[in-house]
Length: 266
Length: 189
Image 1 (cartoon, rainbow over the protein chains, first blue to last red):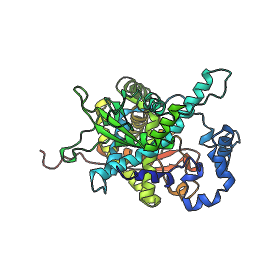
Image 2 (cartoon, chains in turn blue, green):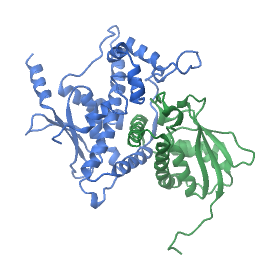
Image 3 (spheres, chains in turn yellow, green):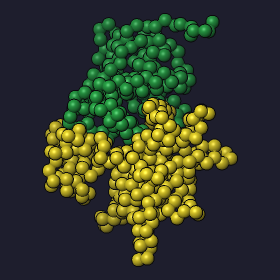
Image 4 (cartoon, one colour):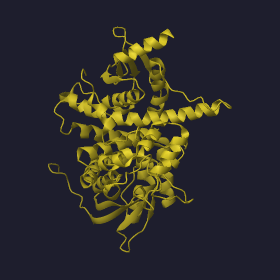
C-alpha cells in the first residue's frame, strides 16, 4: 500500500486510454505512431465537437444502413436499461476471481489483480455515468444548455460515487459515507450488503481475502481519473445481520488534501 | 410448443430472477478480455481458448440453476433443445432471445443469431489482428458447451460470425456430436 499501486500502469497498458481515444486499444506499436499530434490534442478536449470528430475518425471501416459511418459513438447512451440476471454477473465474477487466483503467490497479489481489473472498469464507468448525468442535468435546466458539472471537491465526488455510481452498478446507493477520525485524508464508503459478495463464501485457507477489492479498484480507477489521486482498499466489517458489510477505505494522496484546504479558503 | 416455452421463459424472468443493470457486467467482461489479451501477449487463439474454458466452468454450474428454476424434463429432440436454449436459457440469464435458424438437413446442427449481445455493448475491436482472430464473446460458447454436456448432449459450439468483426450477424453454431449415456458417477451405486 505504501508504494504507488501498479494499477496506474493500466493507463498506458493494453486497455482503452481515454486520453488517446478509440485508437488506444490497438496494438501500441501500430496505433500510436499513426496518430498525429493534432489528433491527439483534439482528443484531449471533451467538447461535443471533438467527440464527433473522434467518432468519425474511428469508424472509417463500416457503413450503417443509412450509409453513414457507424461506430459505437453513434449509439445513444439513453436507451432503456438492459437488465440481466444477478446470477450471470455472479458467475462471471466467480471466473474473475479464479483468473486472479491463478498464478498468484499471495492473497495480497491476488487482491492487487482484482483491484487492477476493477480499475479499468472504473475508468469507463466514470465516463458513462457522468456523460449521462450531465445530459440529464441539461435537460432539466431548460434554456441553460451548459450546466455540465465536474466535481472538484472531495465531498462532492464521494457523494457522486455514493449516489450515482453505486446505483448504476448495483441498483442502490451505498449505505454510508464517513470520514476517518484519525486520518484526515481517509474517507470510508460503506455498503452493508455488497451484491457481488452475496454468493461468495471464502474458504478457511483463504481467510482475509476480500473479493470486494474488485469494487475498490473500480472506485480507485474513477477517482484517479478525475484527478483525485488515491488508494482504495476493501475491508470486511461485519455487523449483526450484515455478515458481508464492507468498508471501502479511500486514502487520498496528501496533495489532494492540501488542494482541498486551498479551495476551502476561497 | 415454442409459444409455451417463451411464456415460461418470460414468467421465470419476471418472477424468479434477481436482476441487475447489465453495464457492470459488460464492463467487467471487457476488463477480463483486455487482461487476458495482455497476459497472453495478444495471442488471440489462446485468448479464445481461455474464454471458452471460463465459459465451460460457468456452464457446468449454471445448468443447476437452470434446471431448478425451470423444472423442465428432458427434451425429445434437438429442435426442442434449441428452443429451450434460446427462449429460456438466454432469456433468464441474459434477458435476450436469440433467433434459432439455419438448421442442417440432418437436424443436428443449428445456429443462434444474437441480435443483441450484452457482452459486446460499448465494444469496438481495434483494427489489428484482434479483429481477425479474436472471438470476443467466446465465453458464451463455453457456457453452452458446459450446459449441454451436463444434460448428456455432447456438442461442438463455436462462433460462425460476429458483428464486432464487421460481419452481418452474430451467430453461434451448435452441432450435436452424440448423446452421452447416463452414467452413474464413480463411487455411487
